[in-house]
Image (cartoon, rainbow, N blue to C red; front, side):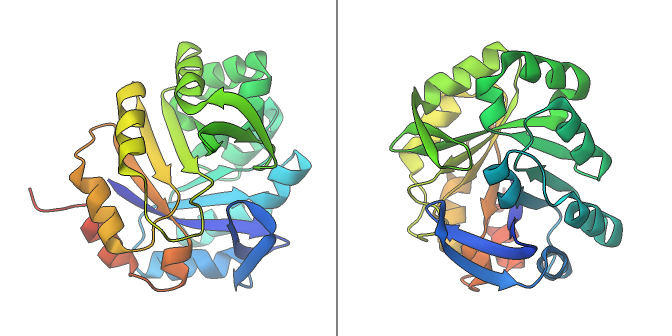
Amino acid sequence: MILYPAIDIADGRAVRLVQGDFDAETVYADSPLQAARAWADAGARHLHMVDLDGARLGSPQNLDHLERVVAELGVPVQYGGGLRCVGAVADAIAAGATRAILGTAAFADGDFLDEVLARFGERIVVSIDTRGGLVSTAGWTQTTQLPAAAAIEQMQDRGVSRFVFTNVDKDGLLGGPDLDEVRELGAVVRGRFMYSGGIGRREDLAALAGLRQPNLSGVIVGKALYERRFTVAEGIAALSPPG
């Protein structure tokens, strides 16, 4: 499994939220490039970047930061936040994103989803973010009545094969993942998925790896890395147990 250090961008800085609350923001680096360089220097082989400004406003606001990170560091970056039209997705990929992560628009506009899947294929990832087990959209500010499993099935029926799952209720609290939830997701996802939410210790990563869930391809970690609960190297090792 791949460890993805998270870089969430708000007002040009690398921040983390608690449970998706924009009023519960902690700034960890003065620039996304500074944060990205720290993770790359520590051994990160991939990065996960979210444009929080774009998620709130509905269109990408930080593609210049994405472009700078890719140009200067050469580390693969998956990017999401405000990608709600074909042009925005194309712009993100042109700026260097290896994968484009869709949220709100994937659920709201089937024609848009079909078009970007036809054009970009497996470079499209759909984000399944939940509060209380129900899908949350619009930068985690609106909660639908759609359960996660139903959302995944709906997306797979349209051709989506890659997902990011975030348990917003656990995000930023460092309390550990819900392993039963991950097992349930693994039973539904026919392609590949990444998990995010609540990772606080390297033992949490080892527990996820211990599930031996073949379609769990990676884990996204933010606050635990910024607060030095474990290093990038320790995280990679925990996700890659011997044998």
